[in-house]
Length: 261
Image 1 (cartoon, rainbow, N blue to C red):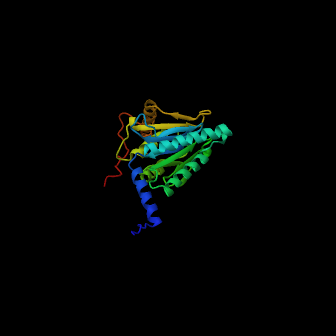
Image 2 (cartoon, rainbow, N blue to C red; image 1 turned 30 degrees about the horizontal axis):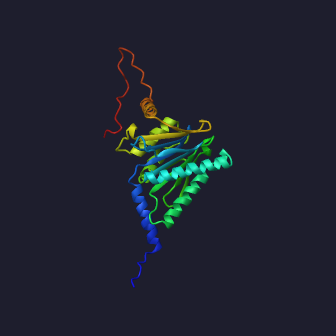
Image 3 (tube, rainbow, N blue to C red; image 1 turned 90 degrees about the vertical axis):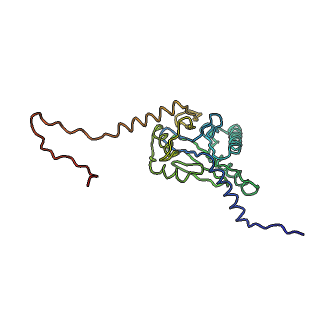
């Protein structure tokens, strides 16, 4: 009688984690950050029909990276759970924290007991009346949950993108500045992402009961152009030197280049 092969549980978990991370890294990354106008979600997505960012409930948004059919199943499950809870109790009882916990339970159960883990990372975001009330919950493929209070990055390039975000992020950014920061962080120093390859949405802080709004390509172009114009105007900050009176020689010493040796 042949003996079954034995594989250590630690090795099984490691293999599943490596498998999920490798396939998630094949997708395109996503950035969500808190700004003065609400919660901005920006993803690189060349498709005009397959959405990575969607609305879950009144003031709650969902985003996912990885295998599309798997995180779309999670999105649908979240919409149904939120609708059922809001109908059974109250709309105010539906919150991002409980949805993130449900996603964590689903992903953790599949990662532990199924042969193949889900190749996804998901984000549940909720906008509050003030910036300190905003919530960002990042759920990994194994059910691990991270609670971020400024910004969060999903995808295989999260480490490098997060580093670029930390260098320039500041609290209270307006919508245009936040979008420019997210776009620059996603593209990196050597690449510029075209507007047509961006998917952008915002949970508006003053958007009424339903806060989710998707930004069109024209709106994204206008916001990025506005930040570019502001950058041009900020280049020159010193006042010009007064002109010398006519007929009198200048007594000022010639300026020297600080880089000149």
